[in-house]
Amino acid sequence: MSKPHLTATTAAVLLALMLGSGTARAAEEVNLSASDQTDLAITIYNQGLAQVRDRRRLVLAKGVSRVHFGGVAAQIQPATTLFEAPGLRLIEQNFDYDLLTPAKLLSKAVGQTVRIYRTHPSTGEDTIEEAMVLAAEGGAILKIGDRIEILSAAGLPGRIVFDKIPPNLRAVPTLSMTLEAVKAFEDEVQLTYLTSGIAWRADYVGQLDKDAKKLNLQAWITLNNRSGVAYNNAELKLVAGDVNRIRDRRQLARAPAGVKTQSLEQAARQEQLGDYHLYTIPERTTIKHNQQKQVALFHAGEVLVSKEYRMYKWGDWGSGPDQFENAEVRIRLENTEKAGLGVPMPQGIMRFYMDDMDGNAQFVGEDRVRNLPVDRGQWFMLGQAFDVTFSHKRTYFDSQCREVAKRLRCTYEVEMEVTLKNARKAAVEVVYLKEFDGKWEMLSDSAKHEKENDRTALWRIEIPADGAVTLSYRYKDGLFD
Image (cartoon, rainbow, N blue to C red):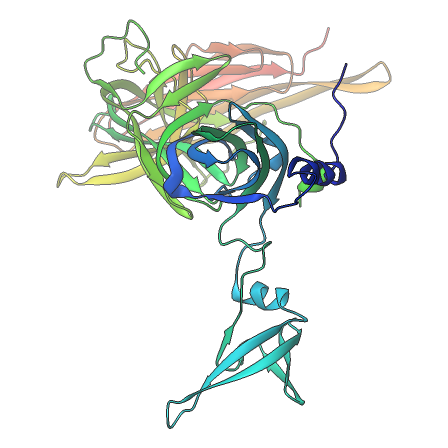
């Protein structure tokens, strides 16, 4: 049988009954601040979501108390809270996010009397007047004696003194709970909740050697905290992979076991978490509000990589007599133990550097890292090569069309001549690719091609230093049965 739902009204009546049928007394007010904190742990996900576990020491008398759990994240999702306190019964909870500011304090005093302290500019003598706050929208309207004063927000008179802070204004975001203790309580309690506004990403810095065959790779975790609270001396865990979340439209506006690579140093412990990867940072850290900081993930020296110049040909037209294109420069990284790596790499940005003749590292390009598992590889595009170029010239074209199923279908026979040039002082190998529109057949080519996939032919061509190579090929495209 399900338990009956406890409404706010019923809870209030129950409170009065629990406080005693003869003499009613106010529930004890207890404030839990950061000084009561005994432990703090935070797990951050890829989607700007974090799970916070906050443990604090709590002392309560027997009976009903109101406990104010101050300093929670301003972007807390109250419906996700889990309060663990053996021996205590949670009756009600409220998230107080109306934070204390001068303007809000004044607006809450509408209809009340405050004291105004004014200092004489010549004598320095203070005078005190009582004033009733009539309105506080965009400034203040005050009734002082028998006169009404209208003041802008920047022109409030002297110092305004309030007798007390309204109970619904908080200096920090606060989760307020009504708790019942069947006997005196002194123990640790834990509040677990989800919050938005804190995110992490991986950033990679790779320094290539002069031949672009080895990479000194440093992986960092970049944390960005906009959740409205600082996390002091917290245990930090990171989840790589996208967990499923239900989105309310109204809210939208390690080396693994066996790795023996000596050059690999992992700063974070990595483990499998279901179908995700969990990284635990070994040292506790402090993440202040509105702060971006970096912590080390791993370092791998002398990771084996390969470099490639890649050229593409789309369509069946030439580039003109004086037009040329620059080849793409790409780096291939294999995430394997044999290559000197072999750790799961969460998605992020890889930035590449290379030393100049003076030994100073210079930025040479960047590309995005996908979530890269062990034993998988990825190409990274650095940019366009200055000295390796190519141009096209169409030397033959013919088309034959016929109607098939009430549609005009055409087959094209094309011959292309490609000039590949290398102005570097050393020979280079380039990869040239031609993508076709449909079913195709290579009729002839001056260099042997490979079939990369059903729609792409590939040539690997060596170009000598300060030299050029001409590639010609003839094909049929758009074939049909």
